[in-house]
Amino acid sequence: MVFVKYFILFLILVSSTLIGKFLSNKYIYRLEELEDVKNSLNILKTKIKFTYEPIPEVFGEIAENVNSNISRLFLLAKHNMEKMSAGEAFEEAVDNFTCNLNLEDKKVIKMLSKLLGRTDVEGQISQIEVTEEFLENQIKEAEEEKKKNERLYTRLGTVIGLTIVIILA
Image 1 (spheres, rainbow, N blue to C red):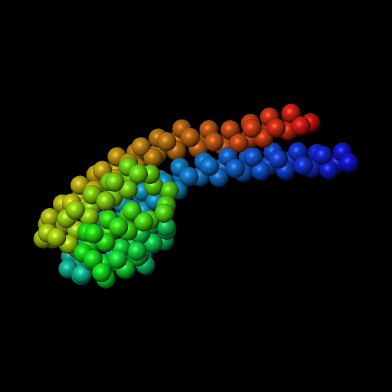
Image 2: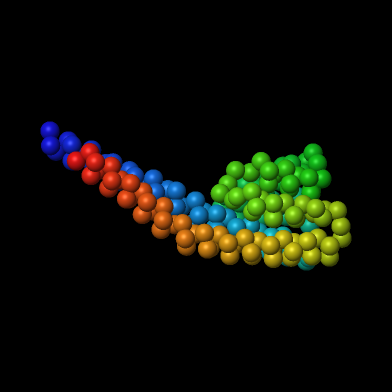
């Protein structure tokens, strides 16, 4: 009987620690997704500048080459372009995209949709560069939040688990 009690207490401690780790991973994933978006925009800028391929094809290539959650964003935008303009399709894709990015991150990414497919090559490239600059600020903010909150949630899960174990023991 004592063995079962200690086993359950151990499971409570391990599960609360894992929950804390799970919550802390949100900050890691947000940072990774922001960096992937920035890399994807760099690919988009290069493709627009040198290949003159249509935007849906470029989005398809980005979706194939990016190995993360962000590839779904570009794939969704590509599919939306079948029935609407590039800017509207990208904006709707960002709105309907489920990820670890917060609202401010999505707002920055949606800035790109203003001129996407509506202006000449130089206008689109300049809009991508402006979006990249804003993304850089978001990446710095995400790094600070990750440093601050990653350990906090991991330790908080462990402390709560230990508290429950002590109360029940």
